[in-house]
Each structure stands twice: as structure tokens, then as C-alpha cells.
Length: 378
Image (tube, rainbow, N blue to C red):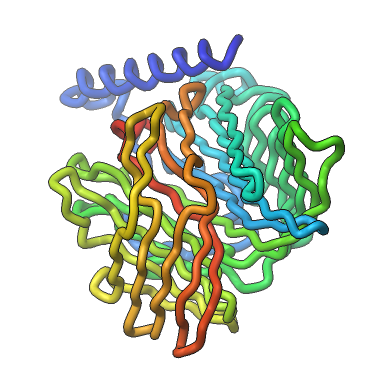
């Protein structure tokens, strides 16, 4: 089945499920009597088990981004993301490997910063032998021929599409960071409007990357960032989208910030951040501690979305004052074959000061809700 046809099937399935649940809401014991678990209180984390799938929650993703350099000094960025979306809490026929409980989606993008090019692909698959799966108890996520597998503390990533390829291994250089209150990351005011969220913010990265204009893959090194997040009821109805920042400062500090934007133009008070120090210690940042100003915008000719393109971020309590900007203007994804949303996610760079010293920075920014509504997966 072609990707577009698979996407249509998934969208129809999601819509049908939502309508059936709405119709059955007043019927105890009906189709939707089963409930997904909610991220409502702090959990007892256990690793490496929690790097695996959490099927009792409806939505889950494994998110990798990285800033890389070749032996010749050329710079690249990459994104590789895997999503699991639950259609039912239990498969109708557990003994049947083809019985659908979850669908799996993935996004892959490579930015060649020197050439100013951005290539991406999105795919979707049902679970099935050799098609897609996310194992429980350890990180082993696969969608068709794309994969993220952790073994002996090291993560191997593989993805390729029509001459764009990524093959890298990632080694954590800092302990994982729990976001929010012990890993409970609030996304809205209502109970359960949250996710469980942690990151490896500094992953030493080595391997190869290839674009269609290369004769052979190029050896690359750099730094990656990994997020895993899962929950069942994350966004409020009045939320329009989010701005997410994952930044590496050259003094060894890592900074995550997310702004949840409401439809009325204000920022959700549950927006926050996390600062990870050079030694791996981390602390949460309240919205009141974060000052952000958009310095410029980029307008997409394809979607007409108007995206922020440069920012000044100040965190006085941490003595951080930095400016970041997109390294390539057009890093916009149209995920018509999977999640159905249009968003901007790309490599950024910049400079500023940290603890009174000049620093350079690099990282990734994700911007959603600027070119249409968010899809059902979120």
C-alpha cells in the first residue's frame, strides 16, 4: 500500500474511533470503557526498562536530533523520530501478530548546512511481523527499515530514503535528565494533562551521513539530543502549538525550553524548561525564569506559515543570555504520509554569554501550529 493510502487509512481509523468513543461515552462497558493510563503523578523510573515502550499510555515518541560535522568541516543536522499511537488498549486478537493495537509513524530529515538543502521523509505502518514495533523493557523501535536500538548503553540509529541515509551510534556523555517534577511534565491545567518526559541531552555521535548528491557516505561526528515522552492526554483544546528548544552551549551546559502557545496568543503557564550543567546535574526552570524575544521570522512559500527564525533567550537566574537563529531558513516538514501536520524543525546556531563568559551554541528547534492545526497523534 502506498504511503498516502496508508495515511488515509490511519486518519479515517482515528476519526472513526473518536466518533465511536463519543457515541459510547454514556454507555458503561461499551467500546471506550477501557481507559488509557494518565500521566497524573510522579512515577518510579527504572532504566533501561523505561527506554522501551509504555503501551498503557496512548501516545509515545522517541526523538533524536543532532548537529554533526564531517572530516572536511562540512556541517549537517538530522532528525529521526518514532511515534507510537494507540488505537485500542488491547488487541482484539492478542494471539494474532497482525491484530492492530498501535500504529507507528516516523519522521527523518537531514540538513546540509553548507549547501542550504533540507530533505525529509515520513512513513507510517501498522504493527506486524517485520513491519513496525516498539519493544517493552528496552529501546528497540522500528518502523519499516528505520530503527533506534540501544545495546550496552549505546544507541544505534539507522534510516535511509532515496539516497538520504543516516547510520550513527550515540553514547551518553551525561546522565539522563528528568523534566518537570521528577519527570512529570505538565502541559495544561487539567488532571492528566501532562506527559512523562526525560532526555539524554549530550550524546557523543559518530557514524556516517549521505545525501543524494554525495558519491559515498561521509564520516561525521557531533552531538545528539534524545527525548522520550509518553502520556495520554497532553494538550488542552485551547492550545495552538509549541516552540521547543534543545540547545548545547560551548561551556558544556545544555538547555531545554518549551513554550506552549494558546489560541488567544498567550503562553500556557505550564510552559517551562530544564538546565543541565556541565557535570550532568539538572534543575527545572519555571516560565517566570525564562525571557524570550523573537528577533525575525521566515514565511514559507509552500504553506504560508510564518515561523520565528531567530530568538534572544535570557535566563537571569542561570546567567544565560543567548541568541539563536536558523542555520537554513526552510526546514519545514509536510507529514502528509503520517501525522498529517506541517511543522518546522531544524538546526540552529548562535552565540551569547553563560556565567559571564562568551559561548557559542548549536542545537535544534521545533515549531508547531504555525501552519495549520496539530494532528490527532498529539
